[in-house]
Amino acid sequence: MNRPRTLLLAFLAVLLLSSLGMAVHAVEPGEMLSDPALEARARAISRDIRCLVCQNQSIDDSQAELAHDLRVLIRERLQAGDSDAQVRDFLVARYGDFVLLEPPLKPKTYLLWFGPAAILLVALLSIAIYFRRRRNEPAPAALSAEEQARLRALLADDADEVEPRREGQP
Amino acid sequence: MNPTSRRLLYLLPILLFAGLAAYFLLRLGEHRDPSEIPSPLIDRPAPDFALPGMTAAEPGLARADLARAGGEGKVTIVNFFASWCLPCRAEHPLLSQLAKHPGVALYGILYKDEPAAATEWLKELGDPYAAVGVDAQGRTGIDFGISGVPETFIIDRTGHIRFRQWGPLDQATIDGKLLPLLDELTK
Image (cartoon, rainbow over all chains, first blue to last red; front, side, top):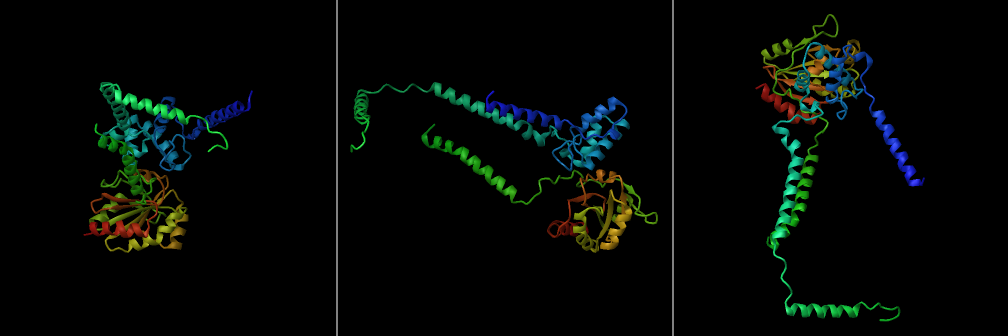
């Protein structure tokens, strides 16, 4: 096995191992609910709730104290009979849409959700228009006798210059 | 398409880039902290709470206290703090200054801290608060949507939150935003 491939394999192995490490969650055994269905709902909700301290982690992943508090709070609300949507609304009312890792679809976020698709659409349309216009353009007219003569003269001129120059010659 | 408009079309990417660059430059110049989260509680009634005092002898703090101060014509400032919080120490002199404002009642909420430690802290630095409630579990903090200490809320006479300071107060914010708002609210 050659050296670059060994290096590549080693790199992939490191990637794989580090991604395994990321799968570990911060939920502590003491926080978990005894009802597995309720606990599964709590986990699903907390995976989409942003930790306000770390900001780019979900509270399911975060070790921050506030994340712990919010995990416990979510479980309490579920036990009290809240629906998943009610739990999310409870948090959004206090922390705003920012607390949701996935921004909700509403007029204010249309640009965010549909902007990339709109740009792609405009790009595809412009490409289509460009090619259609090019196809409709008439083919260039054939050279006139005068142009033919000039072209021949130019090519003949060039032929003089392609001679390789030799060392020591001017 | 004539040659002039085609040449302008080739300029379009450069113009787009220049526009974006100018926009980014402007936003960078605003000195805003991108980790600061806008509060959804602005212009909403302050959340309900009733917290115990630092000792059995002290009265504690509840939303009713804010309403009472509002009824007396005072704008209330609610400051979340803790003795373990270093930025709270930094903003303490500014808060004490604010508490002297004649139209203002300053209240403290002790966030996840030992009342004994906070009593020591206030003894050392001075106690600017009209009353302090102890939020040992941090639940009132969550109801106010705080993500850490210090955070400070300005609540008008009708009990609506009008301003939220994320992180420690500084002189520039007080002069530029807080005092004009307090003037407006205490008119």
